[in-house]
Length: 358
Image (tube, rainbow, N blue to C red; front, top):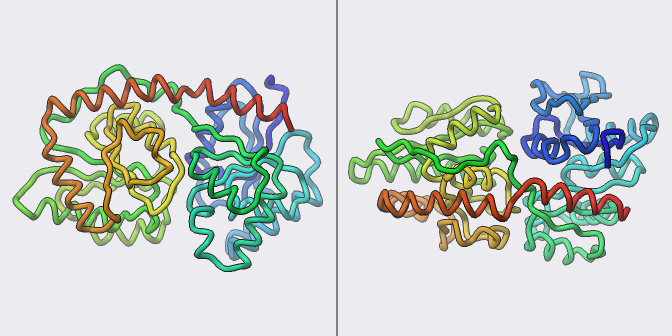
């Protein structure tokens, strides 16, 4: 594939996941992102990327479902650009892809599939229709393969690979803070990721015996209302730092380099590049015990019990008790593990090979 080959993303141009896909395909394709109207500026910018928001500005005030339907109708009526269409997330842009009538590959996200059995019959049928309509389904964990197959989807069109780690995150060794332990939450601020429970547990850990430490919560692509609520409630608490807005890669790397531990404890998940990026900088992953994380089991610290304030408080106590020597060894192990198994070059090769089979 060369720069003359075009890819069209139906996607959130503000999403860090989409930005990572742009990095994966840099030098291999030109990309047009077709998005609904956003009230904040996009972060997915690069020389080989164009962002198109065809809907009128007033559409941003409509219900999200209506926005996706309108975007799909626009694609059906007006979009004639040559290139492969890739849809990012089934439950949102997947609806736009379905309405558009175009063929598309589909990048599925964890929460929209893992929780499907608890959703309405209409939701299940809609997601099933979107999955069946896709020509390729791109997943980042073996656990997701099993869930997609349970929906009676043809296994031959499921492609499994991790999104890998951008070269900029590669490290040989990282000097840590040294003065106090630092945990960072490098995941979306949202109830699904148990952010409130983490904050309550961290403060309980600090209060228990005058312990020291720092918990960093980054806004990124958060649920805005939830983030604002948590910031108002916990922002003034000692030891808690909220980092507003989107961060550049260099800003993110700087924060990860101060973090001893990188926390990811959602109710369900795929293997997120956010976890891999933290580990690449030597920040030890602290994880919920999910099947999606099996591929990095040898470098993670796991919460075996159901995620709760109590189990998270115990996690803070346990991780804080790790000696400096053991922490340094674990940090270096993370760096070497990511380098050996999650190269972005291998991801690029798998994806481009899959496209040739469509």
